[in-house]
Amino acid sequence: MKYLIRIVLFFSLLSCNGNESVQVALERIDKLSDIKPRQALLALDSIRYESLTESDRHRFDLLTIKCKDKAYAAISSDSLILDVIEYYDDQKNTEFLPQALYYGARVYIQFGDYPQAIEFFSRALDVLPDKKDNTGLRGSILSQTGRLMQDLNRQDEAINYFKQSIQNYKSITDSTGVVYDNLQLTKIYMNGRSLDLARKHLAEADRYSNSISNEAKAWIKAENASLLIREGKKDSAYMIMRPLSQLVDSLYRHYANQRPGKFHASSYGIDTSYLYAKELVFKRDFNDRVIVSQRLFPMIPKDSVQALVMEYEHLADEYSAQYVSPEELVQKTRYNYQSHVRAREKSEKEKNIVILGAVIILLLAFIIFLYQKFRSIRTEMHLRMALNVIRQIEFMTQLEKDKLLFSNDNIKTDSYKRIMLLPAESLSNRTLKSELLERLNHLIGDDTAGPAVDEVLLHSREMNKMQKLLKEKKGIKQEDSKFWVDLEKSVDLSSPDFKSRLQILTDNKMTDNEYKVALLIRYGITPKEMSILFWRTKSAISDRRSSLAKKIFGPSANNASLDKLILMM
Image (cartoon, rainbow, N blue to C red; front, side, top):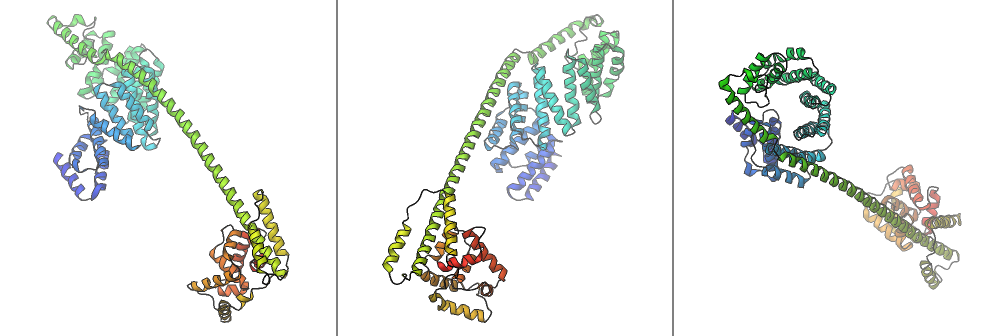
């Protein structure tokens, strides 16, 4: 089977290309590790470790630790898992960092370093994203932390963790987790806390026990018997305990034998109790102290007393060294200190987050203020430039009326410069906008007949070409860009800076199509003729003219005002 798995995995890797195939293989091994961790370990052996990328190598190392933990294999060093934790911590990887911290805690449980294990469990909870896919891992972390708290005799904390883990297991319908953690709560409440609460959690464990193993069901019955004894119902307890040892596997039989042995010793079945206790002696289970109790001791054969007492003493020393060492007090103190440090770090972290949030909000407010200020300044600059354009048009129009445009060039030049150098009054943007619209309306309404088309444009080569196209009912070809360039040059001779002035009046929002319409208006082309030249309907041409007019005059603009203004320019 070992070689078969390696061969299958090897060829599956060959069938794929590049880094993706390794990632797919690791993903499959990860899923296999949850149900068959030993086979998953064999599958990992078939992957060439030296050819892995840094990311895949750390995933491989994490899977190795995971498979060994689930297969109950001994782990001799913490260097591998610490390297994995450091890598995912640096990468800020919320997918694998919680797993790495969880299995780091599992490694330290093997080493007996409970405070370090609790520290890693706590960090795993902190970085574990609040998603449904992580509910199972969250439940395992809470449950494992509860068991560590039990071992450290911190029962209140253990109760809190077990209650949280049970809620997690219920949300993903993990009945096994619900059963085992309820049994842990039953044991805690049974030991001098509350028999009613112990009965409540035992009943809940039994309610979820349909799909669990026989060993777990026997455990429920054994705890039920213990609870009945504490409630004074010894006969009922005996009826439950008597068949227990036959219901479970031989590996669990010694646990099932403890309860009836203790029961008989505490009531009336001394002979039966001795038989149970004698079997437990050969299982080397220290938890059974019945055989050396005051009631059963006289039944031990004289030649066996010394051996049993020595065996009991040896087991007691082992138990004391393993579970009741002076280091337990040190670990409790260390845990209390780490809890204090974690609480302080969490408080400082929250404080720093608040400060950072306040700084970010102030910075955003400052940026918004600068942006609004920039917009206001930009708007003011645009309005002043637009006013200058209107003043120029007013001046040029007045010169036309006085018939001074061609007779006195010096006056034109000096006046033009004077207009461009108008002092910048300290006015608000709203006032500037009102003045601009007022001047525009005054300028347009001053001459109802409207200005005439420039004679130079009427007799230009471009006008002749357009007249020919109109006569033939043909439009301007889209690819004929040279024609539009020639139109623009002719208009610039007639009206210098024509395009730039329009851009100022529209706040640089004039489109290319709108500019072409403005050029044709300057030539005196009617909307009907424009529809032919542009290959568009009259309504489409009207929309373009209306859009340009609104950008200059505002929402209340009309197309006639637009035509007058463009001809005045």
